[in-house]
Amino acid sequence: MQLEIDSIRRSFGGTPVLRDISFALAPGTIGCLLGPSGCGKTTLLRIIAGFEAADAGRVLADGRVLTAPGVQLPPHERRIGMVFQDHALFPHLDVLANVAFGLHDQPAAERRARALELIDAVGLAGLAARRPHELSGGQQQRVALARALAPGPQLLLLDEPLSSLDAELRRQLGAELRQILKRYGTTALLVTHDQQEAFAIADEVGVMREGRIEQWATPYDLYHRPATRFVAEFVGSGTFVVGRCRADGTIDTALGAASALHAADCPCTPGSTVDLLLRPDDVVHDDASATTAEVLAKAFRGADFLYTLRLADGTQVLSLVPSHHDHHIGERIGVRLETDHVVAFEPLA
Image (cartoon, rainbow, N blue to C red; front, top):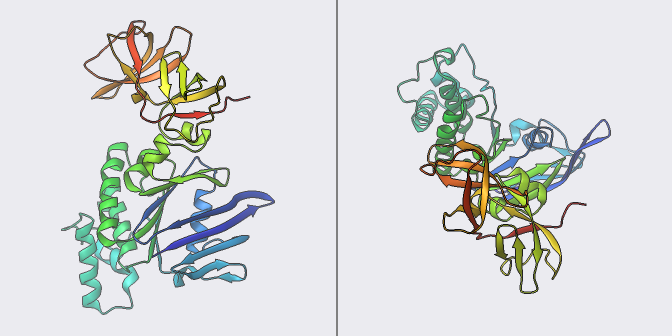
């Protein structure tokens, strides 16, 4: 299903919550609305589902108008499935009956076959007779997903579906969720504040801030080519260092020179100053480098350390270093700049 969101606006009590939101999802695409609490993600999801009305704008599914001025198709006519944060399972029904709940218009044998197919697809084969209280949180969320997919919705909406789970289970279930959605070719829209979850599941991500989409792009482009300073700071880890632009497009920094020749949107003019975004993998530990930095802090992450370093001029940067390089706080280590993507912004006033 092709989903189109066209200039959606919504206010509550005179306070704008959504400000001209527009984007589109191609059939079979998994999209994500990513942003901090209060940015309007869930409100937009509820408008798409038909639980909320928009003040202006349109929602279309395969060209069919679901929401528009004077048009508000009820939720049950939209062919949209929804997975909630709290699972919303029926405690008195077993797994099979929960999954089959939305298939009441089909013959009993077909309902059972379809429900068992989805139960197997979400990795719960053999648990069809269990009640929700007999399942773990992750298993309950799988049941909720199977129930939402059972009627074959044109679009699946997922509202913070993994937020109640622990970090390891979120990673595991996120990867499985993507595989299941791709297996069934389901167009889906996920809402989350967790960027790792967004990157693991979605094909395209819209970063939201104060009711607007700051950038709609692939996870790769959001990380390496952020369109705004907010996206650069919200997505991934990184620091800004002061750079001075040369006429040849090179940017001089306290860590060395970076080439901006391939960065067409870099706001560089000869002699101007910019804030250069450096990701932890842009700052490479190199014992042979003449440039050194003091280790201020370190975070062990298994295969690597995330070091917070202070350069000679006081600038602080992050560096991702293999964990066999175990340096002490206060130690000076050699570093150099190695950038594939140069992202620079006008300095803050």
